[in-house]
Structures are given as C-alpha cells and as structure tokens.
Length: 110
Image (cartoon, rainbow, N blue to C red; front, side, top):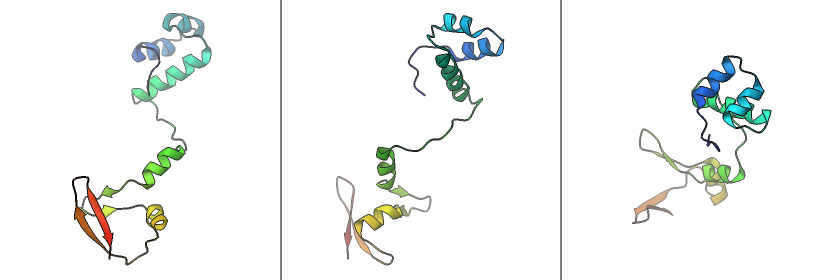
C-alpha cells in the first residue's frame, strides 16, 4: 500500500510488539489518531508478509478493465472473458480471421 508518511515499518512493528503505549507510538511516529496507528501497523504487517491483505470488491473501473482484458495462456491461446464475448454478441462456434497491425490484432468475424 502507498504510505502517506515516510514511516519506518519495521520500527513501528517493533514498537507495537515491544508493548510501547499507543500514545508514545503516536508521538514517536507523528500519528494524530489511534486509527492511524492501527492502519499503519496493519499496513506494515501486510508489507512485511506477516499478515495477509483482505481482498475487497473491485471498483466498477477495475471490473470493466478485467472484462476487457484478453490474456494469452501458457499454450499460446488467447482467452477472452465470457462477459465480453456475450457483450459483442458472439456465440460458441463463431470463427474469426486474425490480422496483425501496428496497433495490435484485429479479429474479423467470418
């Protein structure tokens, strides 16, 4: 995660785990609230691999990007999401001619 302050994450973890009181941690690291302490501590644990990030729901922009992303598999096949295929009106068995251009690939329905 992006940090808003230049906090030494290892030092923060060490301060919390040593039992240093929250008020002293806030003063030492320049935090203005207990929520900041908790947030930065969790971010520090995630960044150092000691805690797993909680995955959340993707934003609409991220979902649209995923739907419009085409991937090449390890076998060299191109994989298009079902949502994108349905949106374009194609169905199983449709075939295409592939043309290479400077911009990339063009799929032309037969």
